[in-house]
Image (cartoon, rainbow, N blue to C red; front, side):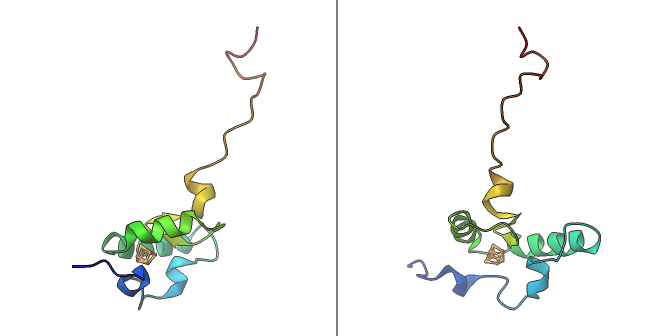
Length: 90
Ligand code: SF4
């Protein structure tokens, strides 16, 4: 058995409503859309390839491989050092 050259051929979202995967906000009914998109992703055989592809792109929105928000959401920038944080003085 060989892997599909194009993982999109196996995508569980091929016939799903695109609005589920690209909601217009992250509050209210959009949260239900995101949850529904992630539910579809859970059964997707291309989940790993989809997420890997999305992490290679400058994507900041949408549900990809059961995650929402792209690289910035998965790998937030480290916080700047703050000398006023407790334990950093002295
Ligand atoms: S993991 Fe989710 S967004 Fe990615 S191809 Fe599969 S169903 Fe679509």
